[in-house]
Image (spheres, rainbow, N blue to C red):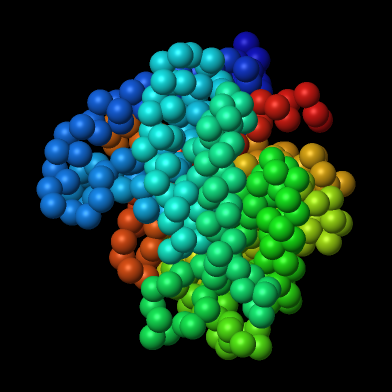
Length: 400
Ligand code: GLY
């Protein structure tokens, strides 16, 4: 009898770790809704604390060291993730409650469609308006996506073959391009689909090719920042900003690279992007310092491993990317298994307890360890990619 109980327990534990059954997924989304209701309730008090700071606080981003809710104005690179989370809750539940909230929070970042001062347009607009358009077909959302893409491509310079990421730190870099920028290409591919104008598509492909040439080491790990000569396109520097060192592998950077080349393959079907995504996946998944639960430390080369903070946001991005890559690759079975293991671990060991963390869903992300900023905290983008990964896991269930 004891043996049967133990075998049954092991069976259900394996099921849980390997992913989520239908009922478990429902429970996780139930919990995510309850947490998000709490977050919505706490936003007005945080808005009241905003004072004379620049802009209007629109979206939650994280918690400060005192555990207080931190909001951001629409210009912040993370402003689109909370609206995106609301769209995912609407997608899963079909409830009007989430549709209304998603619409409201999405509208509040519309001014960004004119903001040509940053490359983060895809993060902001595609996670919010992109999901909104996919789920509602609202023609106004379509217009916002197109205008945002038009603004984004003003940052492309043919001499470099890529889109400039940052305008800050001008003393360090003349034309910095960061691996994160791969994520913004999704918006450009969408703009070509919506308009038939191939300009956006060509710029996205040029950016992906240039990045493939210059951002990667022979082991397919990625540098964070590449600085280009604006006249010749020559690489001037290979640096980091949020990683441990210029030659280290910053975990979220590897995650953006994996997700970025997977989406490039989805949009173009060019096999070189598939190969690139597979090689990046191999670097991450075979790394000797990837912990057994597959939730990476903030940098694969952080000197104090195993006593270094994890980055749950990187894990969530990797899981979501692997679910998609699994649909394209001969190694799909293994990728799905790994992605399920990651979401299982996130659900089991990295979720906030009900009613905690002002309503964020996941704990233990790392924003920028070198700046000692947002270390071991909830982050809106970790929640966003976790819900996306969960939705992708549901859709992947039909496949083996
Ligand atoms: N895109 C900024 C970051 O990943 O922190």
